Structure formats: structure tokens, C-alpha cells
Image 1 (cartoon, rainbow, N blue to C red):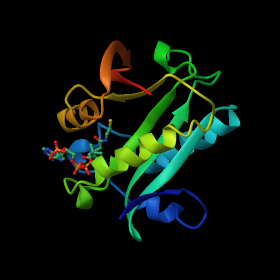
Image 2 (cartoon, rainbow, N blue to C red):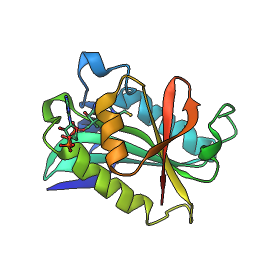
Image 3 (spheres, rainbow, N blue to C red):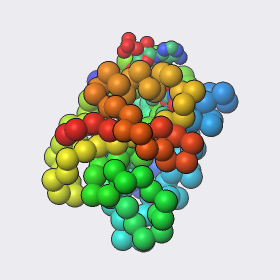
Amino acid sequence: MIHLVKVNGGNIYDILSLNVEESQKSFVSDNKTSLAEAYAAVTGGGHVFPFGIYDDDTPVGFVMIGFGTDEYWEDHPGVAEDNYNIWRFMIDFRYQNKGFGRAAMKLILDFVRTYPCGKADKCWISYEPENTVAEKLYSSFGFEPNGETDGNEIVAVLNL
Ligand SMILES: CC(C)(COP(=O)(O)OP(=O)(O)OC[C@H]1O[C@@H](n2cnc3c(N)ncnc32)[C@H](O)[C@@H]1OP(=O)(O)O)[C@@H](O)C(=O)NCCC(=O)NCCS
């Protein structure tokens, strides 16, 4: 069964071993980069929740949830202020298209709705315009583009 496990000293190498297909590498940073960014967010006074996505004992993916902005993120979308963000989300290439991404998204939104950084109105996510699998998955959960972009990526927002 799919569940989320906080990234910690015991499982960090599980998470670092997970990769997407070569053709998907422009869609998501590698997990090493994401965890370095998580560290920098914390040292910058920000909030971040990195989780491994596990199917029973098997690591199958990674997600990193953020909240708000920090002083170093100057060109952030407006919706980032005081709202939750699914900052990184990936399922390893060996485990894609088996329903794990959809099952994980339910758990991710359950976690966001515990409001670990306090109540907020929105959760947002961004994706490359060519990433039609991500776009359809997110829209099926109610995320809708709000007209903003984050770099090249389309910003989509869910009312919590
Ligand atoms: C996007 C991603 C997280 C989805 O996870 P997943 O486990 O593959 O998704 P699921 O198996 O739960 O499938 C979700 C839906 O996408 C569809 N789907 C998944 N992979 C697909 C593929 N390669 N081609 C077409 N459709 C696909 C499924 O059919 C399913 O549709 P349905 O629920 O409407 O029937 C995963 O593919 C991934 O990590 N991709 C690379 C990195 C990435 O793009 N991350 C997101 C950055 S914004």
C-alpha cells in the first residue's frame, strides 16, 4: 500500500536512488538537487516537507511540499505567498503508470490539509507545458491554471 515516509538518515539513500526517464529529466529536478534545496530552504527560514513515497517497503517516488516563500525567492508567483506548494513530485521510471502517482497525490493533499504551517486557502503546483501526464493528473484533482508561471512552468492552483 502507498504511504509517505519523512526523509531521514535511514532512508535518504533510497530516495537518492530514484530517477525518472531520460526524456522526463526536464520535467523535474533530480532528488539530490531537491534535497539540497530543502536544506537551503530550512537555513533560509523557510518550510519544507520532503517525503519518500513507498509501496509497502519499496521506495517508488519522492515528493517535497513547501509553504510560502523565503527571502531568496524574489521572482515567485503571487500565489506562493502564504500558500502550500507541491514543490517536487516524481515516481521512479520503473514504477510509473501503475497508479502510484494518483494514490500518492491523495496522501499529499491529505497531508497539506493538516495545515502543518497554519491555515491557507490554496495549494499550487507547476509543470512544464509539454508535461501532459502531469497536467491531466493535477486537473483531475481540481488544480486549475491561474495564469501565472514559475519560470517556464504553468502554475495550477487548488482551493483547499
Ligand atoms: C507525473 C507522475 C508523477 C505521475 O505518476 P504515475 O505513478 O506515473 O501516475 P499514475 O500511474 O498514478 O497515473 C496517473 C494518470 O496518468 C496516466 N499516465 C501515467 N503515465 C502515463 C504515460 N506514460 N502516458 C500516458 N498516460 C500516463 C495514467 O493513465 C493515469 O490516468 P488516469 O488516472 O486518468 O487513468 C510520473 O509520471 C512522473 O514522475 N513523471 C516524471 C516526473 C514528472 O513529470 N513529475 C511531475 C513534475 S510537475
